[in-house]
View 1 (cartoon, rainbow, N blue to C red):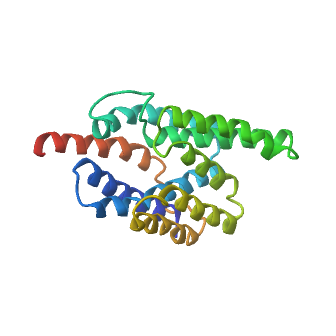
View 2: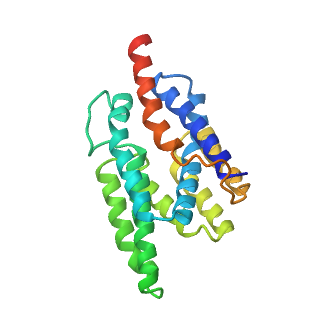
Length: 221
């Protein structure tokens, strides 16, 4: 299974989830949506591994965090636009990637104390995620960081992903946990190939589909 196929599954399940949230549809929509986040975490981890420029990668995520905040707030925060509270998933993705970026720098400086030194930026990023109430918060940042730094150790990476899926949804309805865990075998089927090159697809579709949902809700709901 190529990265393109996984990206399409992630996008479709995300859109289903957001449709359920915006239009207050059956809980089944939200259950299906639990598949999306672990898949995006994996795709971000792969992006960290294969990108030619971590600086550009972080810049793109940061820009789209700001761009996406207005449609996100219109859809989920009763139209209260606030770039520092109840923030969208791009904030979490950006913070996670920043931690991976720092990890790579530290790896080149001192491999012996690498994990101990990494605790500082990761803890700080988790704190920031909680402070701005980013989507999935501090646990999401840690999820991204560990998935990325363990990308060369697939069995361990999959085990960590399953653990995080359980951690995030252990207090949620059982079917949400099960749906989230379904992402793990999908990722296990990844063949490491990119497939069709659609680097910008998620970047654009995230704010656009939220804005469309807001417009539809204003007109028809």
